[in-house]
Length: 470
Image (tube, rainbow, N blue to C red):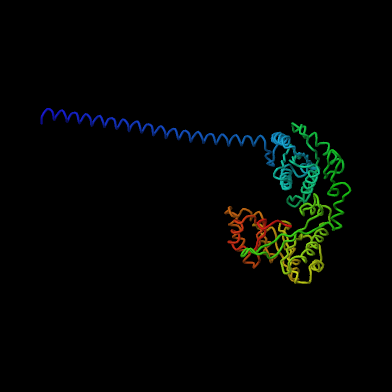
């Protein structure tokens, strides 16, 4: 090997070593960069996690500051925020806003005789009743003890009075059961139109306290306003109109129909016949039945509604199925022969079905067994309405052996995207099939929900998918 060859080998080796050194240097730097990027990503992820935790903590602290822990309503501080936001919005839109101050009547007596723990239970039950009567746009707050403020947004004053009356009736609707004792609750309410200049909760309260004092001074369990426009015990809706007398006479009722469909072919097979009262704040059954219940004329009003609906059936398609509603108390209070006589002897008009809401059962439903059997013997179908999935539902179905079972709307609406509702309904279908009864899904509002209940074996349905009551 010549010197030249040795020199070339040395140069090649040096070049190879230099290349290797460059490669490892590059790789080392690349690894460092990758490691740094990974560390940066982990740090960013950790930072985001900390931010989320801090935001959750801030929200929890905010809730502690603005939410009443007993009732989950806004407290005074939360009400201040709501009031500011709603007044500013009302200024922009020009919409009216009305406030209600509600005070429980003789609530100290409950705390003194039964204890504060029972008092807390009563307050929570009362709040649950109140919130069911309010709209999503309304706000309720507990401002201390047994006093509550309700803000009604975009509400005319006359409408606010009728809403306040519904709230009052809802509170007094039925006793709250505590072991073997029934606790009767009522509330006095003051209503005031709010000017846009209101800036604080104390100003808000000062506007409503005078009206509340009127309610307290004139016998409690009343709705009053600062202008002395009063709705008292369900007897005065507006000037010179006695709603109780109107309901007692029974000439004010009309019938609307809601179609029912066979799911196999989506063909209409009948109607649920629904009552409507006098035009105005007590037009809907939810409202005028409360007045009737409080005035001890529920059975009379219920039977007048039944007669109105049965009379309307004769003008509809012959041979249809007609579902009508009755309170369990009406069925018990009315001699069965008298009740059967309300239904036409002419069977060509169609088949009638009496719906009894499970929500209105009190205790063991077997007390209705004799009466429902008599209706069935007279050729009138019996349906259990508003059926849920609790123990009481199963008892009702087994004891009363209904011809028809109607599933409560809250277990049907949105069932297409709710696996839990699907599992519950699937079980109920099996129970109803074992009883040999028809199953009707109420509250079907979308085609997706309709397809799910149909595929589960539900035979019939009704709901806004096919139209509203008219």
